[in-house]
Image (cartoon, rainbow, N blue to C red; front, side, top):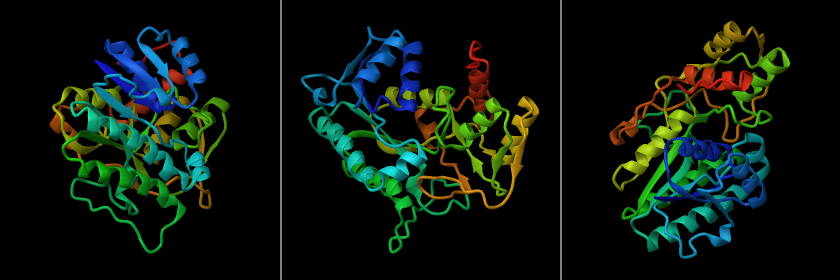
Amino acid sequence: MRIAILGATSQIAQDLILSFSKYKDYDFSIFGRNVALLQKWINSENLSDKYQVQEYSEFGNHQKYDVIINFVGIGDPIKAQIMGSDIFKVTEQYDDMALEYLKQHKKTKYIFLSSGAVYGGNYQEPVNKDTVATIDINNLKSTDWYTLAKLYAEAKHRSLSDLSIVDVRVFNYFSHTQDMDARFLITDIVRAIINQEVFKTSSGNIIRDFITPPDFYSLIQEIIDFKSINTALDCYTKSPVSKFDLLNELKNEFGFEYEAKDGINIINASGAKLNYYSTNYSANRIGYTAKYSSLDGIFNEIKQILIPEKNYDF
């Protein structure tokens, strides 16, 4: 089997590549805009024998892909804000490239990394299989661009019902390999632990469901193994976790301190969300079963950062 991975410089893509390298003997064509950097990473992981780094211009040049996985997009909230409306062009450019290939190779499966943000709304409650996406169409803001770019891609995919396309909606993701300078809740917490600083957060509680590399790999592998379908699947773990439950557990485990007060601004590419997770468990229809809860997954990943010589993927 040969798998093409687009956007392979993203952290979630590289985590998946490492998971594949441990469990499967697939051949890979790896695409990214910074080929030199990507090749350096592949070499550092001793993967150059099975993972061929290529320019985007080489995509589809008489090559047969059984699966295409598209990670092109924005993962860091600050970068998303800086990119602004260009997110539309970037998302569509590489999505169209994959779709044109699928139209000529109908047996190829396409996995597109979407986002829980496609549901729109204010997430006063977690989304589920009956949730209707809500967009304030007469008052669009810059925080809507990311949502709309992903929603447009999903709508286009559903219109191509004869093609095998699965949109994987990632709500929250955390890995020990993540850039610890990125502005996410967990990376901010980890920096506070490492630097022995007081973590400052807003007084409002939020609930999140953080999928980690083992469960994400499991979901992707189930999609690959399943029959051809055209659908969207939400990412989820065994159970979500609230911010203050997480902070208190981390305080007990690592002894770090936190301070909650009003007036602290939170950066988010698609707006503030109270219950940003899904109870739409339709991925179980293709055989996916989460191994970890959010709390367990986060603990495993943080421990690998603080004690890297140990492997907590059990």
